[in-house]
Image 1 (cartoon, helix red, strand yellow):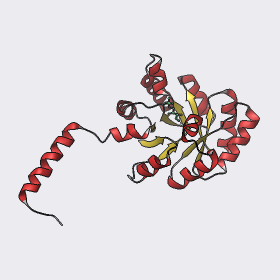
Image 2 (image 1 turned 60 degrees about the vertical axis):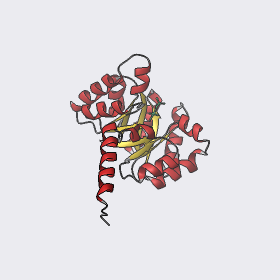
Image 3 (image 1 turned 45 degrees about the horizontal axis):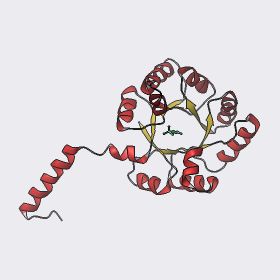
Image 4 (image 1 turned 90 degrees about the horizontal axis):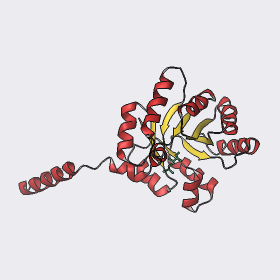
Length: 217
Ligand code: E4P
């Protein structure tokens, strides 16, 4: 299972990259706005930090403009995945860009039918938003299960990228279902390290070792 960081904070991205566990980055217009940075230089910087796919989202909803934006974003670096919304225009752009060999991440997916369309349009990634479904009392993970099942019936190359992740249990459930990628806020990834019994056990080992008076080095 691949881990992407769902952030535009370069300090967080550098920190996660240093663990060797980071496979890519996703951004969206809201995360870019939060960074307070210029979009293109920020994406260039992120692409220089991370070798894996970096999702950069188009801003227009109009097909012609969206296509030009996507082509411009694709030219930033080899590891750009152009992010387009799951609309008719977005999927037309997806088809054109993916036919040219550009990675495309189709975002704002909330139904299995939408996921089928994205796969047929040649999406590299489909991004179903689990947290936003949970927020309106729909089971987000049920959507992941449906998409993984449906894609398993065909030879689609589209990877299921679980988005709008809010907690470590979203990550565990995604792994159980065989989703290809999770994109997570950095702190949700960091929470995976934590267990109170790890902390308690380590404190005991450190103290017992101290009492031996020995040193390994
Ligand atoms: C990722 O590609 C999405 O843009 C992101 O996961 C959305 O998350 P949110 O629902 O927490 O805004």
